[in-house]
Length: 345
Image 1 (cartoon, rainbow, N blue to C red):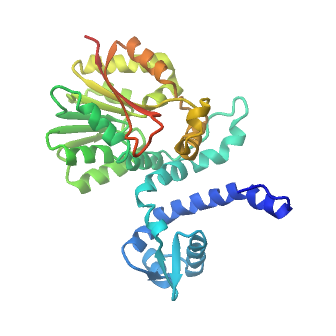
Image 2 (cartoon, rainbow, N blue to C red):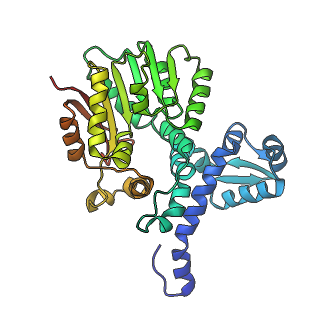
Image 3 (cartoon, rainbow, N blue to C red):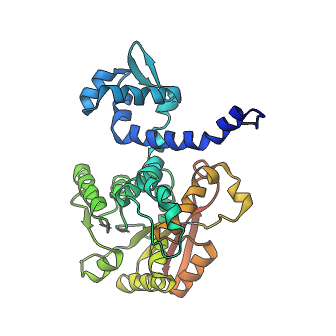
């Protein structure tokens, strides 16, 4: 929007971030309440029908839907509402709203207080972070992991996911890869673990997938009888780094291959490039990675550059078998990177 000379013109431009904030929050609520799925399932529905189905107040619901109509996501005709093509087009992207709004909205609102020395970390909704990350993985992390698996000479038969969230990752791999005989999922957050148990039971893979509510280190020390040949550390190491430091990451990786000597490890991380002006001008960098970079120092997480991670792998006695990034059709920034590692020969 161009700068105007009238106060009103400047006010309209100045308020666009508020508009975006409110819109992002309410699109998340559209998904989270089930209203999006209800509207997807029918051509149109009245406020009374939707309110009865979801146990909602009719006046508040009508105002909510008319707000979204003004933003172009739903339309009203003869007192019935339906999704516009723009609204239906959000289906693939709901995971990003679950992660950034459901998981981290509370984080963003605490940042002013947490700028002070000694203020501690901001909170987040770990269960929503896990669910959102798993939903997003359909488009980035799962295809990336499959490409890394392709570099294994024997393929993957037994899969371990440390930090499995709601286990969508594991369920999808069991569905797509019948050669995976057994899988283990470890999730430290209780709500995330319970979501995983529910999803695995509903998927019918509860005989192939074993779930544990534990930390990664707790799982390694637990004595659980597991023999994975492949493990996924998707956005896990930057958590360990932020909370316990570099030597803890090195020690964790060493313990992992000490426990499972023939293990292949897939590490997926985001390259820390917030100071790179060329990369940060990219549309997806501004829309997603810029706020993603912002939230990590406030939540006890530490993103790092790729040379840093490669140095850590070498310290842990690991060699890089392969290095991949996301499909440019999904993400051409090349900021999300996957490594396939094994114990150095």
